[in-house]
Length: 106
Image 1 (tube, rainbow, N blue to C red):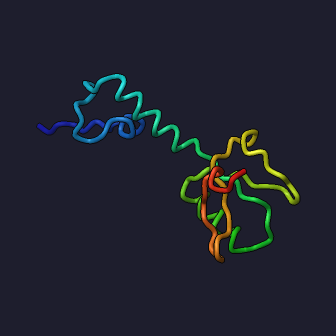
Image 2 (cartoon, one colour):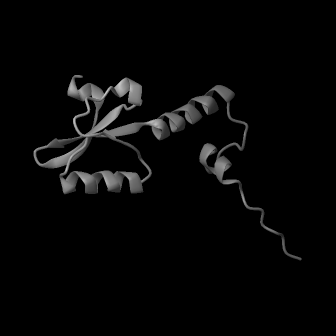
């Protein structure tokens, strides 16, 4: 007689680390951990309009890895609060890097 395996729900696998106490975790600790996961998932990256193909390749790579990309229009002056973006793609010494909005000073 063999036991049937029950598949775990994918959502629960993300919220409860392996080897955990399986729900016996303090509720405040669990909420803090879930809020951290939500914060990281909700971060948006502003990508200004450009005809530079290297920038477009980097933006596409970010999108493929699951990042939220907000693309700009030609001549747009972005309002980061309205767009809800906390990061932006910028060129530094010929390389495109994702930087915090506060690092830019705007």
